[in-house]
Length: 470
Ligand SMILES: *[C@@H]1O[C@H](CO)[C@@H](O)[C@H](O)[C@H]1NC(C)=O
Ligand SMILES: *[C@@H]1O[C@H](CO)[C@@H](O)[C@H](O)[C@H]1NC(C)=O
Ligand SMILES: *[C@@H]1O[C@H](CO)[C@@H](O)[C@H](O)[C@H]1NC(C)=O
Image 1 (cartoon, rainbow, N blue to C red):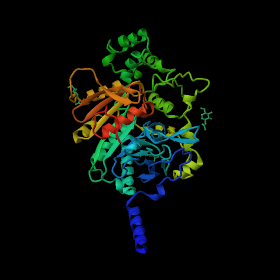
Image 2: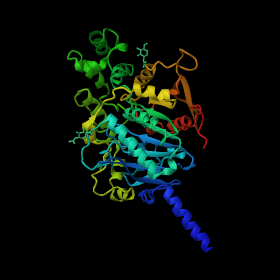
Image 3: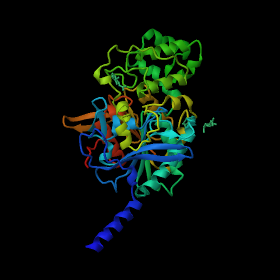
């Protein structure tokens, strides 16, 4: 008996050395209305001499020791990946103005160990000890890579595990640039399998080139204005027009701005959303839009905010929750850090964009043979689906299956029957393009069931229409 308990102590301390750091384990998350059937960890990863990135790992509730490791990154640049956890694909969703946590049954950690990383330093709970938050695309990918190495030393059980990188929006730049670094490190990442990018900023100029026709064909722009732009700015061909450059042309600038004002009273992240949001906040929707406008020198949006904020627009649950002292304590956040913000103005303002398109990084990923999924909610106008379809077409890959046909549907089968979830095009080189029908920019938030099925099938090499079987 004594021997057994000595052996037990030996075995458990031995596995302690090999496994997840006990100090980062979250044991008492405030406001929980359910008992998690998985472990989760929150702490810091060293990304550079002066930079520490906060992570929150939600382990798989299925088979944590075998299921893959999936990294999730939100964009901005400057927005926190905890948005992804709390408002999109994570298991913990907040309600009651930050008072309680309910279980998101469409969480991706039902079948994967999902690592949410707040990046770069200055975003969310992540920090820089020297307060310099200026950072460029290539530095961000380097810091993220270094943070992942630190993650593997904290959690050696994930060494050699199947690894996927996912994310959305400006992570359309973070992901391919990080993937190139990971592909160069077969020793630490021998099983890097692929990337999934939602409504990604894959080609910034073409995003604007496609936005004006996108608005026109969604009944937001009058004929006289559209024809004026076509005739006087685009040689009568909007389809091939570099509308992006017209922001810098005094004869066309106002016309283009007028066309883009078509969404003034709408949610540009989801044309059919019924909710207003407050453009003066740092909540992600207002923030990303502001960054996009600053990038091309556009004036602030003329926004007709509602006088009373409807229930569906009470979007500060996450903000309130993550600033509770008890929550921060349970997540091991140093009390000296400032308030958690959904998106950081300091990071956004100082950010140095250098990758206006990620064609070279896509070519590297394709040559390496990893799987690539580009998916787009089809009623988002911040990073619209036409931009990304054209981005993939510009890679000159062979379209698989029947040529010159309409896109092929993929389906979601739920309790109310089977419905078209969106459309798919498969390209040679392991590249898939999926649309998610009726979804806006934040696909796992707008279409949680469909996005869960999509990602499950992507990482398990199944047809996208296959119902999830755990
Ligand atoms: C801040 O960091 C950036 C990026 O690393 C660097 O280029 C810049 O020189 C730094 N600024 C100061 C004041 O140290
Ligand atoms: C959260 O939003 C509500 C309105 O939607 C507002 O009344 C409240 O003051 C906000 N709370 C915080 C802490 O921002
Ligand atoms: C695709 O083909 C076009 C036309 O031949 C060419 O101009 C373009 O550079 C090619 N794109 C890539 C990524 O190779």
